[in-house]
Length: 104
Ligand SMILES: [Zn+2]
Image 1: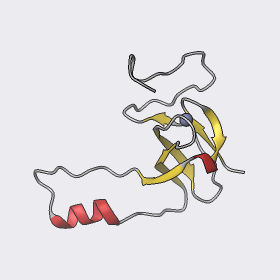
Image 2 (image 1 turned 135 degrees about the vertical axis):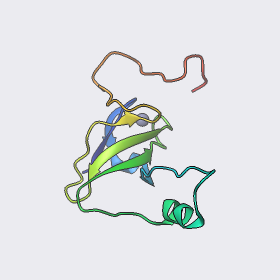
Image 3 (image 1 turned 90 degrees about the horizontal axis):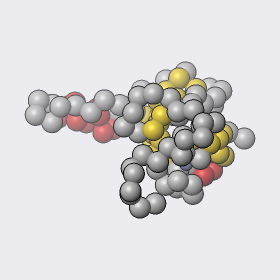
Image 4 (image 1 turned 180 degrees about the horizontal axis):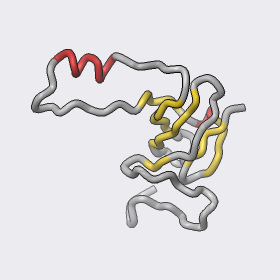
């Protein structure tokens, strides 16, 4: 069984998530060529090793998370809340609510 570390819900079965793709840097809209946009939208590296990916926790917190996953062993490193760069300690007592006052 593959488990992904959701920063809000903790480790969960991968069946609760939907794969959203590799994390790739978005080109600058003001200067990008059509070839750069094509590569950004359609070309994937598909390496054998560690890849940063975006996953959607559809049956859990309904949030997008970033996970580093090894494509051969399916080992996953601690997740990062989208919009941040630091890994999240899922064992902390912090509720981790990213938007204070927002509806859940
Ligand atoms: Zn979650």
